[in-house]
Length: 171
Image 1: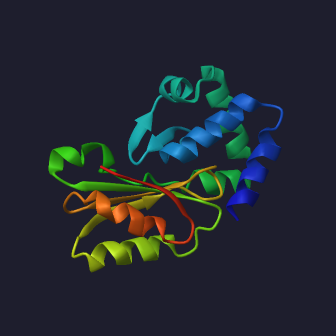
Image 2 (image 1 turned 30 degrees about the horizontal axis):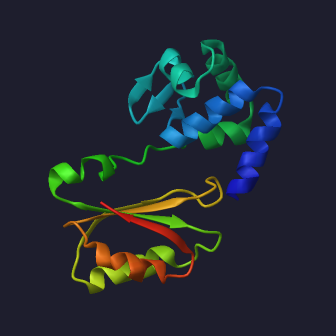
């Protein structure tokens, strides 16, 4: 499904790499296209200039991308329903005395979230947040788990025994 979505986006924008970068950046950042033709992050309006800077394109590429999206029912349905993921605690975990576990996933990713959370909870550690990069969109997706307390490094070897885990970092 996700691969098909990217194929459709690439097909519709294939002659315009800047438009592809705009569409990718909108999805990456959770930005949606509203009925008024403006880009939003939740209820916060994003300027064309800000998005152009983030996507490393000319501002005109933003307007032309929006026009293409609005003219295509499939694209409009996709981009008008994007919702931002919310606050990710990874960068402030240290300030909050939380732990961070980053798990790089290989080509086999089925069951990794269940197995890693099971391992963590068996150690009596609470999980505050878990988020994963899409395995079809990222070359080396990362599963990030935020724990109630910092996790000891001796768990790395146990994580590495989980099928599909290729690398583990604990902060």
